[in-house]
Image (cartoon, rainbow, N blue to C red; front, side, top):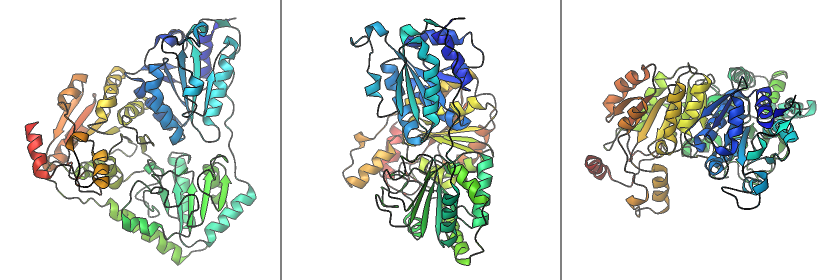
Length: 565
């Protein structure tokens, strides 16, 4: 029996395990949203901005291990959703973005909101796939999901003309393709094992394509213990290894303190284990140096095209990093080695020193370190933590002891506006899970309106807002590049009453203005049940990051400005 393209599309998504599609309603795909009413198993989550919808889909991909799914309308809708494609591409997250288009008869005429998506999206997707004929719909969806998951995972865009949804076809639903997994060969495993046995100061950086979850974390811990290896979770992947484990070698993030960075550079074998490597991870391509690393370098990645693209590895293993962990665990580990044990202990002690709950009280607001240390005490063992972009994030990674049973969600590209949507996605995926959203006063006014989506769906994230009335990351860079020549107008913010703002959505709001209030207010806020919570922290701009004491305003001037506000 013939069915509409829209119905076949909905059935194809269900066949691929899609139970949730994020969107902002658009006329260019209204045929799909209508058809979805008649198909069980797939929920349409209506958001308040396409950036929010797309970022929710990226987060949902990480939470489920399957491709996230969003649908946006043509032109402006896709422009708003572009940030999600950019994030998924750099973060190696499988994402299928459906894009409504103009009617086929109007293509090429500069019709309302028309764009050439094959050109426009070519640099932020793995593939752009237009659907031209009704008979293509299910096959192209199956291929889109296949491309999104294969090799280096990433985003795929499927373009759907508005007039195609109601056309009839008898094409059957195309079943999902099996996900290809590249297993390490026997000789490869033996060679890598031999390298690890001979090394006295190895380092394992684990990152973006390493499988997540307690099962893989347990395997990594066993590998670290039996092979005496330090494990370092990389940029925005802190939950891949327990910060409390004795083989935790430290978090590989942006701008580590000099003493710790110098210690790590004593390694004699650097292994990027499912870590792509970026400028942020490598301190601006200086360690390992690009293109020629200054230490023996092993790159393990599930896509041969990525290995060697920037760095020349000494050993290149194109395979699934989780499969390599399994293969090593089946090998005989090296005998006890005092030098190796001392190396692991040295890295661990320096990493733990950075995590110590120590900070300086500031005159112009709360040192955000005090807030993060308190959140660390209140986090559930299985909490989902999301972070927007901003210098406040450095406090999260310095003072929170992440666990593999937890999940950390953020935009790898440092895109502002990711925190709130990703927190909503985490709460939707598991409404009983504690979800804590960290966001700054800049990012919250970009996508904070997705709090309305949380209310619509009845989920209740806890939002911790760092408000220092300044774009502090940019202010910091301005100080570094042009010391003594900072114009406050370049980064200053004039903010609303955020507590009133949150309460207008139906959230419970709390305010912290002094360090003495941090403990009792946080405890009260985390105890709230049945509604979202906003904790508005008047944070210091002098202590603008976990490792820097600089501000465009001296503390006294800062106090005067806040009093005037």
